Length: 579
Image 1 (cartoon, rainbow, N blue to C red):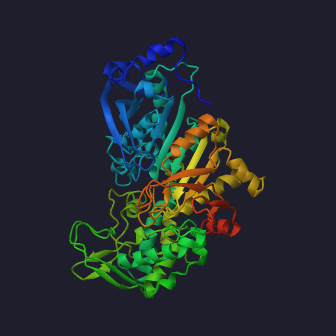
Image 2 (tube, helix red, strand yellow):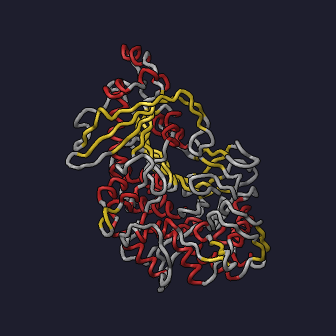
Image 3 (cartoon, one colour):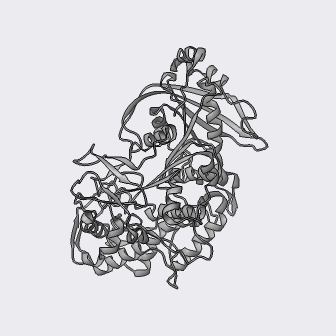
């Protein structure tokens, strides 16, 4: 159970401190972590800046319900002894009267190490001091790739390790002590430390879970771990199109996705526009059934393209019928990357996910749709493999499925100890008493949902090899629980499947597990889009899968071996196990 924060004479002293009093440079500077809190770090007291926000509205956030909060943003800088560097950190502190003995570390997305105010203000809403870092990259808005290379061919390894795991760890250790000082917590009072992040932020969360014991609980969503495979995966759809020599209009792929959703929607026993059983969809839907299906998308005159296939260029109306060539492209993408010997190198997106990586661009001069190389995937070739200071991969000429496999291997071996983030041994975190809630949208079109399933299975089999599947699953769920979110997209609800619930209160359930020992059997979800907005739903705990009977609001969570098998992959294109 939670320990109460204010006791005895301390309570009257601290509760008399207002947020305005706390939010002064002198007070904040007097509460900085003492020298030696983190060996090798020196904080600059003169760098402290405080900014008071008395009325901030959180609205339309996917990980926190709407709320009004007041907070003090306290930033300061530190250096690593022996380096000529500068790292900035920021901590958003709630009013002392609203503080609930909590610290929240946060991460970023894409190539950013933080999400700005988005996550930390959410932390304030749960009574936590929320922390973020700039990783030493120059500012809170500077992305990691800006300084990844010191020169062509020369990696800035300090940058790589700070992005990989070190900066979040330092921000967390300093932040926990700063929170205790700032809120005048007694040494005997428990400070609960949490983490929340999605995508790159999810990977950063796993970097902390796998290496340290600083956290009591972590909410990690759609993590971009297995970094080498994940980033090159973004190029796979492009290479499929180039190999098959067909570049479908975005509207044609959209028609295939919508037809998949329509067919697979009722496979869970309920027709609601949501594919809750993409495993059954994979087993029963035939993409070739969409051949001849008509499609139409109106012209777009400037201002970009809703399918991501242009930057401000006019796009003509798209109309026609789904071709056999398009279905071959779609099915090859869904099947995942195989090398020339038919061995699987990686998995792809579930059926019912849209084909974001496969989006083509329209050439107004030729009147043709043509290849559009994924910028994210391309940069990981040019900057992180070839070590050239550019994010643009100009061509995929000569690139085969074997090439993609080799690029995955090169990235994996080069950044195994910094960015890959797939260690399956969580023994130390388990022993520390920490808890993990891991979620992934089942129709994620950026990071395959199978990526999270594969990691969960790696942890289960590595940590408890002597136990049966059921016993090892139960043992793992004592501290690590995983949920696939039906119909959800990447780190958000899905506009293609609007009636799907999203676990907006996952942090509340994590807190209840950590502080009150109430492990979630299902995850609460709220419909955030469409006509059913506000409806509550429940998400099944993996490996159980949802089936709807007479009660169409609460699923029966069942064990389905065929379903589980469809999520398991032998990535036998590599000699080493891929965790």
